[in-house]
Length: 392
Image 1 (cartoon, rainbow, N blue to C red):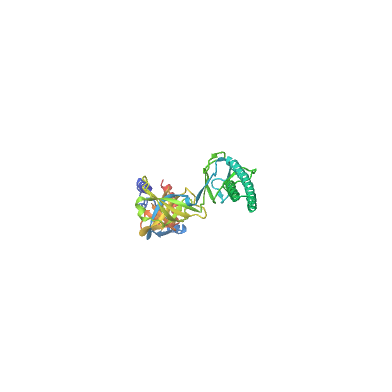
Image 2 (tube, helix red, strand yellow):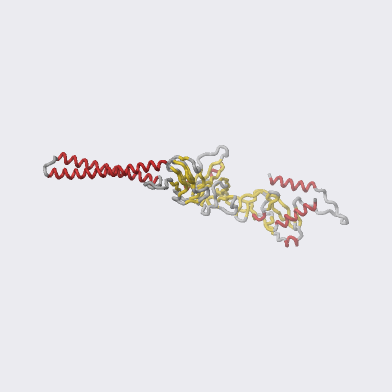
């Protein structure tokens, strides 16, 4: 649309100007100019270092260009949850902070600490009691053995004493298991000392290292077990979710390479690989989500960035290519200056496609063989504005 509007504007400017009048004393007419044309003397072309190159037709591999956005790699994203019910006392990390595995990122108060310590103390008391009962049963068993040898006790009494000792030993083992269970719950689950301690706060730790991408609660909030506190992701790897048109689905498969670009770094290309094709079609956009995995060692790429992926679709096609340096901006429209020869240049709007190195694909406005100004176009642009002001 911009292309048609600019062409119409240039033609309109040319048509509304009065016809040039014959110059006095020469009987001739001034040379008519094409709308948007600039005429330079050879000396100005040389001093302006103006260089023109031909537009070329080249065989290029077929490439699908699809839009999408970046997201965190869900395979390398973890939730930091509350292990028990309680109230948040401190939150020690903010979104964007990098944390390490095992780092304390918050603290909470929980009545479960007191209850678990009470259970632990009861388990210690029970263990001491069963150990005392075992000692008594062991002494009783030994006495019955001696009495049996002296014929002062019956075999039944000796066997009963042996049975009592086995029961006492079993009770000791059960008490030891219960004591260990309560200790593990305090030390390894709640991450607090088993014995009473001045600091009763339950630490909230990040299990894995990465970047905090979301905070899910606030200080003072009451949380339940398994409620989310933070979301941490290893952003050295991210995903792009691209929207692939339905009619292009047959050209794409898992394992294909993709070249991804984002607006923040227009001159950089990030290599990726297709790892999954969506199972369901979006009924509104008629597209299928395609997941592309990207390495992000410098962490330049961030979730929610818009991105464009180019995927090789196989086969080749002819493409019209020109130097990217030839592109100029004219009131928001991409244009080039075409060299007509004899110092004549004319501005022409173009529509471009994908960039390949220092060249750009021309979709509309030029044909192979046209000569475009690749260096010194600012001189032509300046001269065009000067001519426009003079004519007004």
